[in-house]
Length: 212
Ligand code: GRF
Image (cartoon, rainbow, N blue to C red; front, side, top):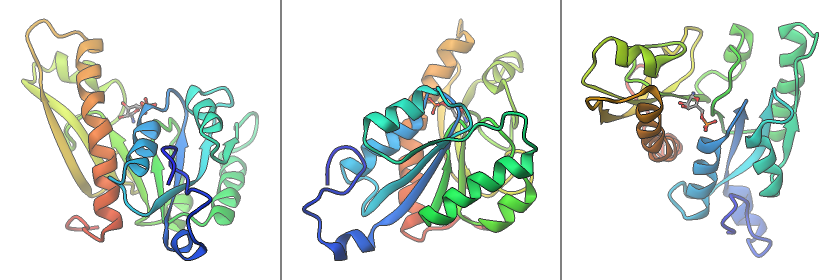
């Protein structure tokens, strides 16, 4: 195993065949994607490999990092296409990559019900709030403005709703006096980088949340 989330050439065919296959969808920075790679590299997500990194933003930093790590990287912009056309291209890549799990890591598009139905129970997302509180966007600001005393992150299965699928795990952080959106976001992000790998490892180990 290299530190890059890819199997080493020395791994036997049998070991490689037994690896669980992860696909990543991202739109931006990709720090959660990199945390997942690092966790594969150091064994916190055992027997796994990343088989596709797909981005709807061609110059997303996360996609660049995927290329640097030698992973299969796919810039799939929507452009003037309809959502079904765009998703068809992504689904074709996923069909070829045969992932066990599809991890949304800062993927900024809504998936259609057809996409979700095709991969039901296989799609995970990370959200920077303690769901069911604060689904949707701009949630760190909303938590601050609501006067919350704590926030955190949630890893959950994706269903047809907005951030409504079964929760796999959450990690909490305090909201401190004088916090700005940037300060709170950074504190939550730090927890995200532990939460996502742990959640993936649990799901791959067959530990499923109630209702999933
Ligand atoms: C994270 O805050 C995640 O919770 C949200 O989008 C952000 C992605 O950050 N869904 P990164 O691209 O993984 O650095």
